[in-house]
Length: 260
Image (tube, rainbow, N blue to C red):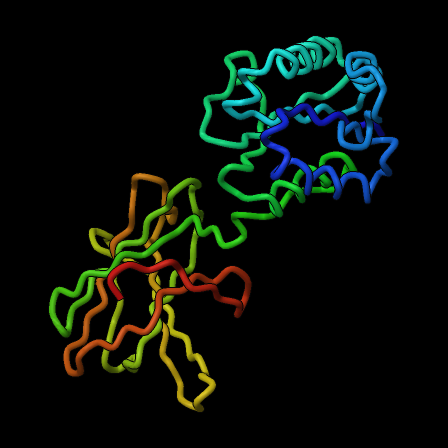
């Protein structure tokens, strides 16, 4: 594994910590960094040519100074040519606020300027070692969300919407402090509904009561076609605690909720 670090001398304060981390991981012989790759008395151009001979990765540290450097320009242009032939991988590393060269606009770059040295160093190490740098970002995604409007203390409207996918026969449950004798659930505009009730034991030893309703026929919530539930009570003010979805038998997850 060979790595070439293309940079301008004035950017060494940010480049060198990364170079040292690569040296510790790959060995100095496999990381071309002029501070140890070019010894006193050696020809700079000759050593640069050696370093640019079939490196696996070229990291081009993009800054105002490096963009003005003729030597650095030769390095990354040569790397771009090699990359086009599949002989190397050129990865820009943004050091300051300078615009990325037009030739590299399609390249995925490492934004050292915004994420800092430790995070950029970690990304570079992951790239050269082939380790998986994927980190889940959407594990908490919920296709359904709920929006609650309090019409009165005895009347709530709960709009359940789908953002991306159609949800077929979803079981949506309104968890309340109201008993089944005090409250009821309906679907606005439905000709008829199937209803069900649930009991949820809390950690405090109390019981929450759940209400669900499904329309008779055509039970699906689609993007841009929300469902509006009406939760009413004729005696005690409604105490809505949460809106949840049954994802497996007797397993529920809260819906992201606005207005509760």
